[in-house]
Length: 117
Image 1 (cartoon, rainbow, N blue to C red):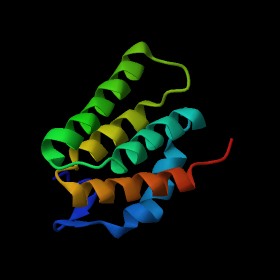
Image 2: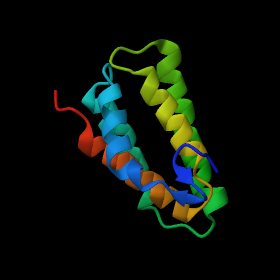
Image 3: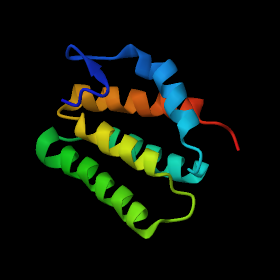
């Protein structure tokens, strides 16, 4: 489990408040539509019904890392490399439904604190 979002095996609650606010404020180059697109993908996957998290959901989440990497490699306008790192760490922290739900909450907090353009 990624130590970035967890303390002693539990979600660091500050990721729903001050750490999310700080992360959102760090994303100076990220366009709001980029943030919304990736958050929307997380929520779409969260709403899927499934029988086997590891074989049905986890691959879809890992694919998000590839999509983020593609944008980084292209140096796409409106992309922020700090957001890429955040996504990589967030997805690496996901091991099961519980950690996925936690990741969605962290992502939602960052979206909520993202500066309005």
